[in-house]
Image 1: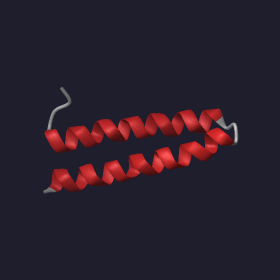
Image 2: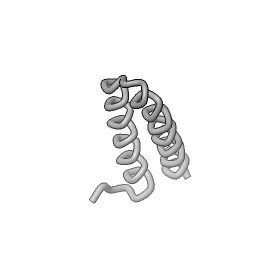
Image 3: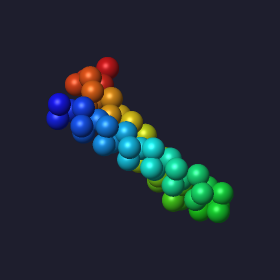
Image 4: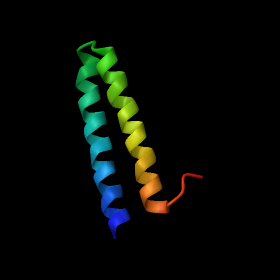
Length: 56
């Protein structure tokens, strides 16, 4: 139960990062957009790890 809650929370944060990166990219704030996309990727990895217990 704890893993699935953590997985859902990190998935939600990943979606929020992607939604925040899109306007930053449009306003030509590339550094912020890249940072938010990397954060979204990290959240995706954490979500996979939370649900499956392993990465590979």
